Image 1 (cartoon, helix red, strand yellow):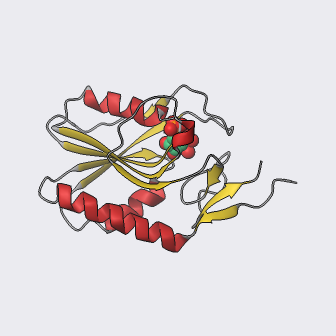
Image 2 (cartoon, helix red, strand yellow):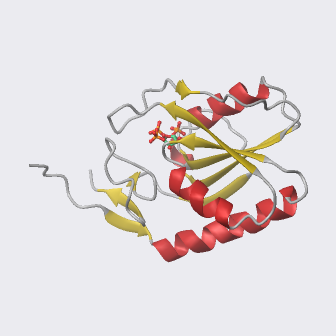
Length: 175
Ligand code: PRP
């Protein structure tokens, strides 16, 4: 029996869709002729990545890495683990990292450093959600969708102990 309260909607699906289209328009303007390599950070990015790339109507390639810092709890461990790295060359490519959320910033900082070492032609980052209240390190995020409050978010790819990733809206859990 799980006594946790039901997730409450914070950002409904239609608002997510509108923001994804706005981000896609900006990315299209910047990357249309560059055959970029979009690199998603699994697992959380899977739904955003799927919706974003369907709005990008130009040649591009998609890869994923798998990173984890939250384990099965609700607080970041502060240590990012590279669970699955890349096995395609990045050197000379225009790389755009796709994240669902930048929270402490540790995950995206780690990923950008990991990719920078592989000498891409350019390296930028896009996140659907930004939670600046929790930042622990300085990170440069080039495309930011929606700023969110310091609440525990689930849905649209985000989880709590692996639950709720399938919710179509971005929701929060009461403490
Ligand atoms: C979540 C989320 C981001 C990261 C952001 O991933 O998907 O990648 O945390 O948090 P940060 O800015 O504090 O580092 P998580 O480590 O929970 O793994 P998951 O993507 O498999 O859910």
